[in-house]
Amino acid sequence: MPEELQRRETRLAKIKQARKVLEQRAREKAAAEGKSAAAVKRAKPEGKDQYNFTDPESRIMKGTDGFVQGYNAQAAVEAERGLIVGQLVTEAANDKEQLKPMVEAIEQQSRQLPEAILADSGYCSDGNLEHLESSQQPERKSEAYIATGKQKHDERRRPCKRGPLPKGATRVDRMKRKLQTKTGKAIYAARKCVVEPVFGQIKQARGFRQFLLRGKAKVQGEWALVCLTHNILRLYAAQEAS
View 1: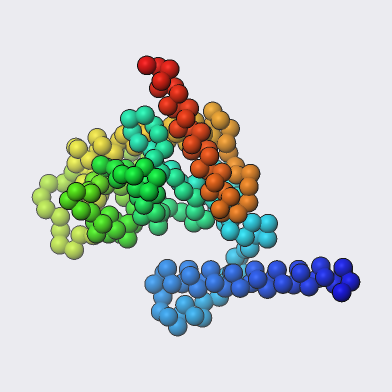
View 2: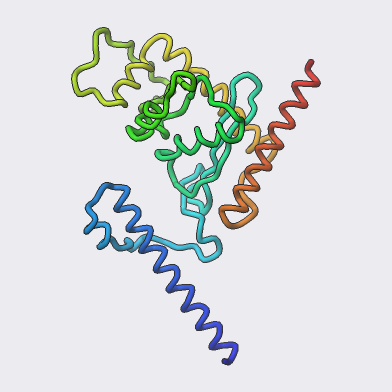
């Protein structure tokens, strides 16, 4: 077959493959929204849905400088030395379903579970809180402090209401009350002093602001090396200080 026709056939095959992927994503989205089996089967891609031929596993995500094509890098940091104890990369644009994978990554990579888990409102969902409750065991318990909503810099948190929670209170309601207590406020306030400096050091001090490789597996390896480098530098600095 002439080279020109080969290119056309190859291009057509790639377009057909992209269409199948977009249709599968539409069905997965419908299933995640709790739609019926018939609705999931009928789900079609929206007109704005896109497919990246250079790196099909990446997604369009909103960043500080606008929308970018990339991945969502996750990291869990321990409070004493600022070491990364769990890391992974996901193609999900938000963190609503990432708490369970992150806890599993911490246990796998550090060989232990944390005594407490602090996370911002991006990780707050009834499903995440349900997972934390159902997976707790007396000898393997992690106390969770997860923000239920964003707070403005000049906004003060309301004091904790006294008395029992009303009937029908959700897990999110219980977490909100927990963070309104004096103890909950003090513990959660430490989050911004633990994880935020780590991402600042990686982005600003070391200049790592974008992945250089393509494909989720390669990007995962790249992020693992970045996190490993951070830990080595932190340990070296601690040794020098002592």
